[in-house]
Image 1 (cartoon, one colour):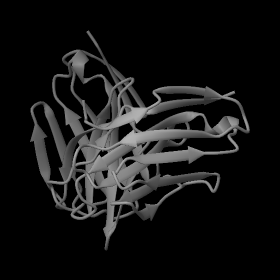
Image 2: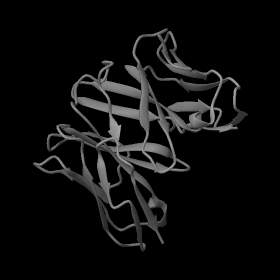
Image 3: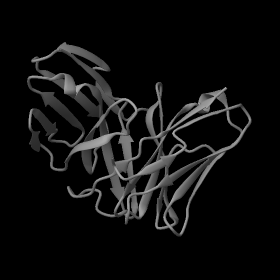
Image 4: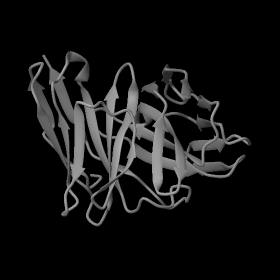
Length: 113
Length: 118
């Protein structure tokens, strides 16, 4: 069972365009993380959002955590070829000494020059 | 460079065989995690160790096992390999098993070990 649904699965856009990718779940998470993975590399953490309704900005990237802490979005403004990669969201379950990340399948973004 | 080292980077083996994947966490990190990434399943959590002890278990098959040694490096053992086990296996580490809800905790992934079962 895939607890985190990411959409779209694939996105190909031109340099300079804006885009939004979504991460939705029926589960409530302690926090949610976004990662970017490039070919031949492991995922790299971009941001962690903790509070419902939280908005965080990282240069041209804007991350939002839903009020109910079940969903999140990533908006990229004026996309550049360097933004190309697999964007993964991960819900964090925490309880006692057990911590687990549940990943979505990702959105594969291609930004064409 | 995340500081997490995985070996081997690529491995091709036959069905029914057994392989061992190795991971050295970032210096000082006590927690080690193993993940499997495939096209159809995405990134799946397998198991977590903290300072030598198993702390959380995910979708890890009985044919797979892992351990974390006193020097904190970890090994993932995959046995009776099947074609469907072909995937990218990631090791990740973090400084503590605590505080996942905090903003400061970060998990660092290695570059992965590509396993192809033929």
